[in-house]
Length: 448
Ligand code: GLN
Image 1: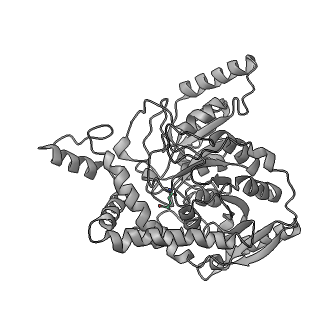
Image 2: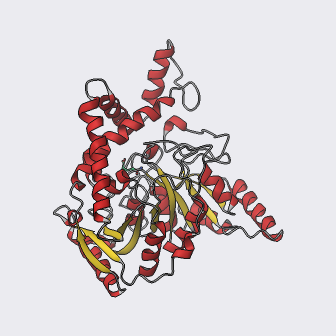
Image 3: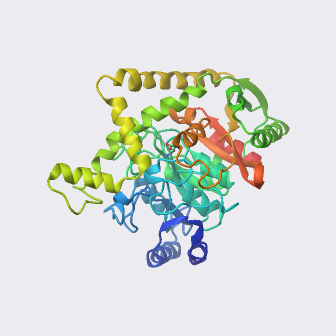
C-alpha cells in the first residue's frame, strides 16, 4: 500500500486520483495484516485497489467527478466496495472520471482531466479514465470501473489494460451513483484476465435487499474458467464492426489478434449485427432519459451543493443545478427531459426501446453461430486532449462498438492486442452471451 501511495503522489500530473488519505489506507492495510495473522484466508487479503469515484465510500469523499457532490461523504459503502473489502482489499482512494460517468475522454471531469500514461498529450478514455490510468501507470494493481455504454472497455483499450463488464445484473448497483440504471454495471480493470477473474469473483453476487435488478445467481469462482482449452471455440466476427469508420491501424491490430486466435485453435465465423449503427441514437436517447430522472435528486435539499443566494425554493433548485452541473450533464438532462415529455415520448423514447429489443435479438441470432463475438473496442486509438473540442457528437460516434453490447445487457471485455498510430495501445473487444463471463475470461487469458 505504501508503494502505491508513493507512486500515486509522484505521478499526480496524470490526474488519476480525486481523493487519497494515507491514514485511512494504512489503517486498512494494518487491519488486513491482522486478519492474515488470525488465519483469515480471504482471497484478496492485503491487495490494494482504487475505486472509481462513482462508488460511494464512507472513508473517502465521493464526488462522481462533479462539483455537485464536492466533498460529499456517504454514510455507507457501495456493495461492490464492501464486497471487495470483505475479500481483503485495501483501498488506495478514489479515481477520476467523467462527471456522473458521462463521457468518453475523462475531459468531462469537473476537477481535472486525466492523462494517458502512454502519451500525456492524449486522453485516457472514459468515463473510467482515472481507473485505466491508475492501473496502466502502476499507481494501483487494480481498480473498479463502471460501464454504461463502454466506460470500462474503452479506457481499458486506450490505456492497454484488461477490463470486464459483466452481464447486467451480475454486480450490485447499490451505492453506484446512478447514471442510466438499466445499463449501469460495475466491473474490474486490471493488468490481466487472471486478475480480472479474481476481482470479478469477489464483486459479483446477489444483493436482493439493495438492488432489485441484481440477479439471483450464486457467486462464482471465475478463476476456474481460465485454463480451459479454446480449441474449437467459434468466434463471431460482425461485419458491421469492420466498416469504413474503423481506422486502418486499429484494424491491423484486431486482424492480428484474430489470426492469433486461429493459431490457438479457434475458428472465425462471419456474423452480422445489422443494427449496429442504430445503437448510437438509441443509447443517446435512453441513457439521457434515465439520467434526467436519476439526477433530479440533486436539488440542493438532501445533499451535495446548495447555491448560496436564492429568493425562494424554486430559485434555489435552479441556481443549485446551474452551478453544480457541468455542460455535458446539463445537455443530457435536457435531451432526456425532452424525449420523455408528452408528445415526444412515443416518437423517441418508445421507439428507442423497441430498437433496443431488436439489437438484443440480433445478438441472439449471432450467438446461434458462434460462442463469442470479437471486434474492435473503439474505431481509433486514444485521441489528443481537446481534439474533439466542444463537439459532443465526435465523442458519441466513437462509442459505436461498445453501445450495442451495453443495450443488450451482455458481458464484454477489452483485451490488449497490439499498438496503433503513435504507439498507442489497441484493445480487442470480446462479447459473450448472458452469463458467459467465464468463457470471455478464458478466451482472454489464453490470448495473454
Ligand atoms: N461514453 C458513453 C457516454 O458518454 C458511455 C459512458 C459510460 O459507459 N459510463 O455515455
